[in-house]
Length: 237
Image (spheres, rainbow, N blue to C red):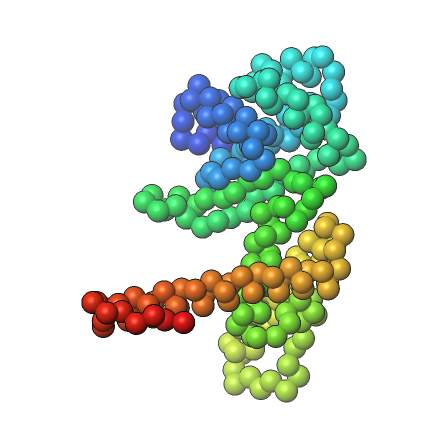
């Protein structure tokens, strides 16, 4: 009976696959986050967790194993045995996070960003910045403070549904809102942050977005005025 493979082949022969994964593992440990395809990110997660575990142990044998697998050992080994070992001293596993970022132009390959968790400063993580941007976008659309509303999604008791399809759609929307609320709660807990502090960060992002929109709108107006008066353009204030 054919035994199932323990790893993804990634459409490569074994030597090329090992070389690519060694490169990706080294880059992720060195830079903290990289973008790659989802299958490579899932395979990479297993290897990075293993390297961080070896760094936490910190024996001479573990150091030799790290140096034998990774490139640029002078830059990578101190990170594993010092920085990441201290950061994840009380964490048994799960040192990385994979975030889907859509599809790549050209071959339409599913892409992801994989990053090493930063338990010391969760606000610097990509997942947290994505969450803040999502909340800021919701606040721009609804024009009201969004954090408290997103944390406690309520069902409209007066809503009337014409058929089962409309009811199922409303139920799915409510489930997605509750899932998003759990995501916000988890992010706030990891960052040790209150709802008021998160709302302040969202307000800052909203103000930046509004300023950017106003700047883009003024550029369009200036361009239109220059087209109307190419020789004697009036000053716009």
